[in-house]
Image 1 (cartoon, rainbow, N blue to C red):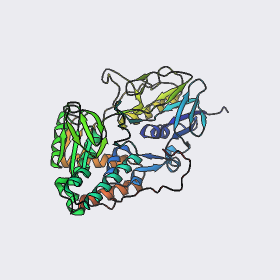
Image 2: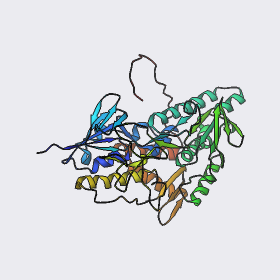
Image 3: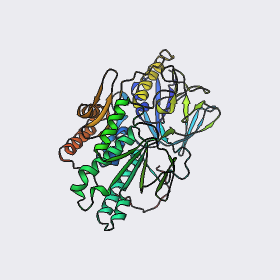
Image 4: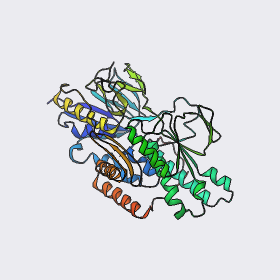
Length: 426
C-alpha cells in the first residue's frame, strides 16, 4: 500500500477543526499546527473580558478533541508557523520544520492598527483568550482602585473606558461594560457613583453594525443608549498618546482604557520558494475551490482567504459560517481526489447582542430584535460550543447571571513573575 499523503493544517479555529472532522483519515495523514494547545470560541471573548464567562467554558484542548468522533485520527503539534517554504513543501515553526504534501492555511486574522504608531502597545484587544483575560483584569483593577479613591476627578479618570470600532465585537463589549455600569456598580461597588463610569463607543462610519441591516444598526444604537453608552458616529481615531484620543476632526477624548476592535488583518507569514497572491487585509487570493493563487498544493479557508464573485466583489465576509462551509466543501473535494464542487456561500444570517434581553438578528426572510433575538442569539451560540460540559457550564452561568445580575467570575488574577525561564508561550 502506498503511504498516505500528509495534509498540514495551520490553525485550529472553526475552519481547521471542521476540515479535520470531514476529511477522510483513511486517505490522508492529518497534522494540525497551532500556537495554542486549545480551540477557543471567539464570539464569546467579550464575555470573558466582562467577567460573564470563565475562559475554560469556551476553550477546548486539541488533544482531547482529537480523540473524539469524526475528528479522531488527526495529530496536533504546538507551534506558531513563521515561514512557509513552497518549493520544499515545508512549514517552519519556532520548534521544528514540518514537511507537507498538501497545505491548508486556516490561521485566521489578527488586529489591524492601520499604521497608527505605538497603538499596539497602548490599547487592549479581543482577538484571543489571553487578550480577553487581560481586559478583564484591567477592568476589575480599575473598579477596585476607583472604589477606594477619594478624589472624584481621579476616580473618573480611572473609569474612562473607550471602545474603538462599532462592529459586533465593539457593540457587544460596549454593551457588557454598559450593563456593569447600570446594574452592577451600585450593588458591588457602592462607593462609586454611577456617573463616574464613562463608556464611549467610537465608529468611523455613519452607523453601527455595518454588515447588518439598517434596522439592526438603529436598534443597537438605541439599546446602547439604554445602557448609558455614549456613541460617536462618523469619528475616526488619529492617535492615542498620554491617555488622550485624538480624532480626525481634532476632537480630543480622555480615556485611560481603550479597547480596540476596529480592524483585522490576516496572520502574517514569511514566504520562501514561491509567492502566493495576497490581496487587501493580508488575505490569500483563492479560487472557487479555495486553491491559493500563485502556488501549488496550497489551500486557504476562513478569514485569511479571499474569493470574490458577483455577490461579494471584495471577498466573502470574515465570519465563522464562511470558514465552516469552506472547510466542509474542501474536505469533500479532497476526499474525492478532484476539485468537483465549487464553493458557494450560503448566508444563514448575522446577529449581535447588546446585553440582557437586547439583541438583533438578521435572517434570510425575517428580522428579530429584543428578547426573541436575545434568546435566538443564546441558542445559536450555545449549540456551537464544543463539548456538553462546556455547554452546560455556559448555560448555568447565563441563567445565574440573568436571575441575579451577579457572577462569581469577577476575580482579579495577576500572574506571578518568578521563576524566569526562556520560553515563547505567546
